[in-house]
Structures are given as structure tokens and as C-alpha cells.
Length: 475
View (cartoon, rainbow, N blue to C red):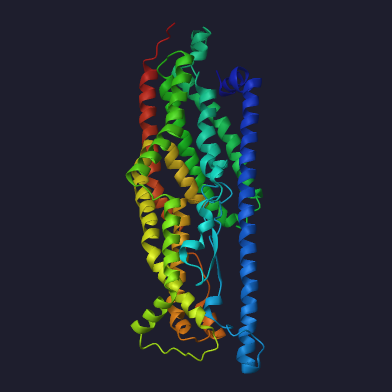
């Protein structure tokens, strides 16, 4: 038989049948929906960031205009007495959307990606609305291309490839096929690669369409490098499942055994192991409940505000070198507000640190547990490439708090002394800019797990070929 004859036979027996074509149509529809959903989520985030920046810019434009009038007109300027106070300064902050943000939603729909930096707001309230934002999405997750690949791709491979040899054997036509000079090894691998390859053609066609057509602020030049890494990971993940299917079907059992065994493995690797790993990590490295965290933090804040006068007096006594201008036009309550907020941040810092430490310990443990499931390996890689991982959001939150702390230390003496902030001083501060991790960092993080999957693929291929070499037609 020629290759053309084999392809024609496979089309007639499997790929070209109506149920198979309907299955491909359903898979295509789900991929298109996943692409649309990911693009819509990205567009919503981009619009929210634009609105946030516009609001902060309008606020600061009015603040700068008043400062300029005071500096040029002096006491004749018709401005508020608090004009120029560093307590009124606002900085916009946002987590830049990665080039492949439309490919994987990850946790970006429930974790903070924008916020206003101001000394009047303590750290505990900077992102507090995200503590309970969208709990349904947190429980169910969002459907995107990464979810479609991790969950649906292996399921479709199983449905199309579970009866590579058993279907012919059960129909009593395997002996006839082999009598035409076709080796069982060639027939086995040709069918497996042809069926899985047809699925990959559909998948990569959709991914290329999304890469070129989705409304993303990133250009194709910036989207292409992570997309190539994404594609390589997809191929490795597919190779793992293809080799696993080959291993199970090479035992020459009936089709019913193959489909039940493969579906059990799919459930274990895609759902049971990741859920179990998450439960274990939550038990070993428990995070304080968010209700307890907010209650404790707000109790600390309330107690601190009740001691407002004592905090101000104690600060001045502890810093006698700081000249306080009691005749300054800037109201004294702004000084007290700064001191109280600064004290609240210091008092609640251990609570925030406890959350961050637990998250970091779990992240480190995932690096080991992920080897138990290819779904954990690939899903983590997809979220990192899309910039929607929990670790990236956590780095953003940490950098925002660090920026606020640096700004507070820089302008704090002036606030306590009742001195206004000049335009030159404000411009020298600059704005917040997120420092992202380079793509090479993700390569180093995920290269070894991908090589581990490839090693499993190679071992499975060796075992399958040995079993095929001793293959016997049985009833």
C-alpha cells in the first residue's frame, strides 16, 4: 500500500466519517470560543487600565495646575490651603498586559492588575476590592486557549486514537490488512500520527489565526517569540498524550479496555492530581483566610487612628531634628493623616508578609509537584507566557508597595514639616513602572519539565516498539 492509499483508507474508516467530522467541528467551535473569550477578557483589562490612567491624569493635572498658580502668583493665587501637599499626589499603576495575554486568562480576572498609589491609603486598602472579586470565576475558572489545550486536546486524541488496532481486530479485518505487506508497526504509527496530526492542524490553524487577528496592543514581532515557545510546549504536551495512547493500545486489548484506561488516565492527570496537589499545598502551607486577614488589618487600622494625636506627638519627639513649621498654610491634619497611615502600614506589614511568604512557599513546592502531571507543567508554562500567572501579579503588588514606601520616605519629612511639594520635586519622582521578567527567565524555569516530558515520550516509544515487534493477532 502507498501512503496515498493509507490516507484514503483512514479517511474512509475514521477521519471522514460524520461523527468524526462533527467532533472536529465541535472542537473548532470550542477553540474559537476560547479565543474570543480570551480576547474579550484582554480588551476589558486594557480598557480598564486606560480609564484608570485617564482618571489619575485628570486628578493630577488639576493638582499641578494649582501648584503652578501658587508658584507663579504666590499668596495672590486663589487656591486651597492644602495645595502642593504630597498627600494629595496620585500615581497610576498597572500590570502591563503580556503579548500573549489573550491566549490564557489565568488568574488575571480575579487578581489586581491596576491600582492608585497614594499616601492617604494604607497598603491593606490598595487592592482590597480584589479580595472578594468574582468568587464564581475563582471557583470555575475561565475558558481560554490554554484550558482548551490542557483539557480538551488529550480528550479528543483519546477519542480518535483509542482503537488504532483493536477496531480492525474486533472487525476481523486486521489479518487481511497485514496480508497486504503492511507491518503492524508501520500501520500502528501511521494511523496514530495521521489522526493526531489532523487534530494538531486544526489547533495550530486556530492559534495562528488568533495570533494574527486578535486585537492586541502588542505587535506581531513581540507576540511571535512567546508564541513559538507556546507552540513548542503544545507539541511536547501532545507528544506525551500520543505516546501514552500508543502505550495503552499496544497491549492489544479490546477497545473497551483502551477507552476506559485512557479516560481514567486523563481524569487523573488533568483533574485529580492537580486538585490533590493544590489541596496538599494548602494544607502544608496554609494561607490565613482573607476574612481573618481583613478583619485583623482593619482592627489594627482602627486602633491606630484612635491614637492619632499620640502618634503625631511621638513622631515629633522621636525626630527633634525635623523642623515643623506650625505657621504653614498646609493643614496640620494632613501631617497626622500621613503619620497614621505610615503607622498602619508598618503594623499590618507582618500580615501581608505572611500572605506573600505562604504564596512563595507554595510556588516553590509546585516546582516539584508539577512533575506528577503534564497538565500542571504545561498550564503553568502557558500562564507564565501569557503573563497571567499568580506569581506575576504578586510581583506587581510587591513593586507597587515598594514604590509607595520609597515615595513615602522621600516626601515624608516635607509632609511632617508642612512644606508643599514643588513641581520640580514632583517631576523628579517619576511614575510607577513595572519591572517584568524576561522571556529567558521563563525558558530556564520550564525547560527541565519539558525535557522530562520528552524523556517519558522517548521511553514510551521504545516500549511500544518492542511490544509491536512481538505483536500477535488474537481473538
